[in-house]
Image 1 (cartoon, helix red, strand yellow):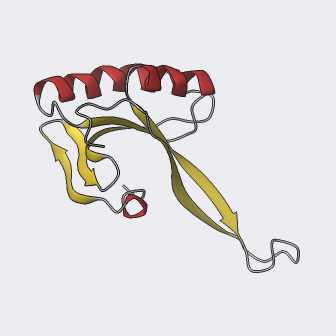
Image 2 (spheres, helix red, strand yellow):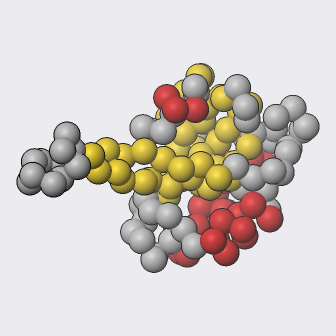
Image 3 (tube, one colour):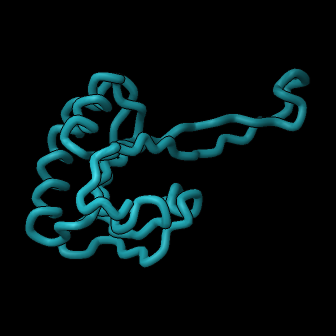
Length: 128
């Protein structure tokens, strides 16, 4: 959920009626997200599971919400394309490193997680 402040998310509701997280953003409106752990190169099956989940949640619980899959690693380009083709946005964890000297003098670097969100252009109700 570390990515939510970057999106100016409001009305954050975690673990509600089986939906991992539900929130609202100024640019995307209501969003329902399925969070899946994944490591680099192994995102195919988490995406398969999450697709069914977010589409079911949208159909039965939140028909106007935008579906989002959040992964622990960057998916392949064709996996992002697949999700976008069926109207699902994809986000993933992106680890960055920083240090005060750029690591040149052996100073400890800090790791920080941020997220990359590739929004789908699919619009449920045209209000996005």
